[in-house]
Image (cartoon, rainbow, N blue to C red; front, side, top):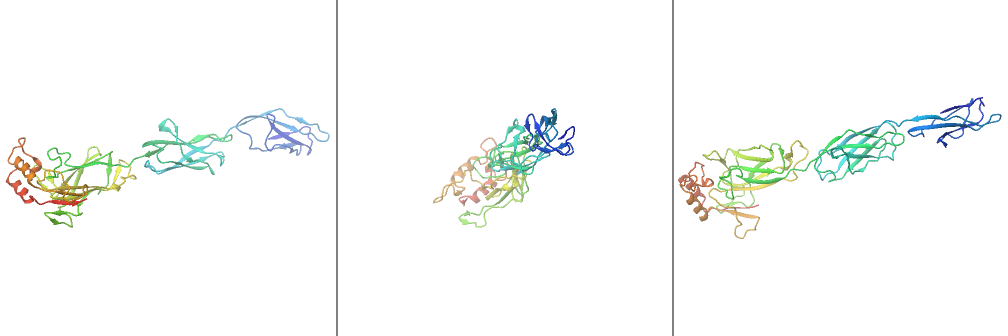
Length: 384
């Protein structure tokens, strides 16, 4: 601001600058030099300011005031940028850190930025922090604040008397829950073999609670080795024959159907069954991810013990002196013999039972009977 006094008092006197009657900050008693008083200020806020210069007078010069001169002040433009979100995607149990930069203008270190969710009607997103320091701020969204789904987060700087407010572009932040296994069921998709019996196991059906993508090795099978006995003999290395390969397919990425090839009992009906034995079917948590989100995996491995003993028509039971839910035993005995005899030489639809057909040729006959007798009264027992 510059005030010129005429006639010039030279270097005499002082000028005070006023804004609508109030002294402009720092603008008191500005010395006159060569008849001119000059003053620079950053105190004017945005808007119109009617500035008046008042000359104090000096020897031989009367005091005087200028007419009001309107100064128009506009706020400095700012640019707010949401620079980073971590982690993204995030689990509901994880805090989310959001970094923001406000450029342009001169935001002070007592101002803050906030967050809104553009995908939820610009609803405020509660977050700790947000205080600007040298134009940068960090905010932390507590676990559980954002529901599962995609949230388009926007950082908001409100501005002040000197700086205009601004908003960042929306940044999508995904909150994804980890997949879970709903069920692991032998033969679930083969009605003729489904049920508690494990005389043949041709498929294993795994159901997740959502679509998943699997890495190589997500499914595995091994011999169960915990206190395994067959035919009254301990089997310290487990009992059974591992298939050469596991094959799996899905149409919706939720239900996965496993089949076996190599080292399997090849049925004439086209189903390849696991050989008799006791198996640990394992789903490796680190290799199971939501579709398109490889950074998030299942929380824990899931292991299901699967047994197959041809001729056994029932579910395993707790053996004598065993612990319920811990110790199991299955055996081909008189009860199974009654079921086997009831199906012997019976046609399909007339008493035939596919799960008692060892070679899947559509008839239970002497070939199947030999397999049945070779297992009779030879219990298979284990501990989980």
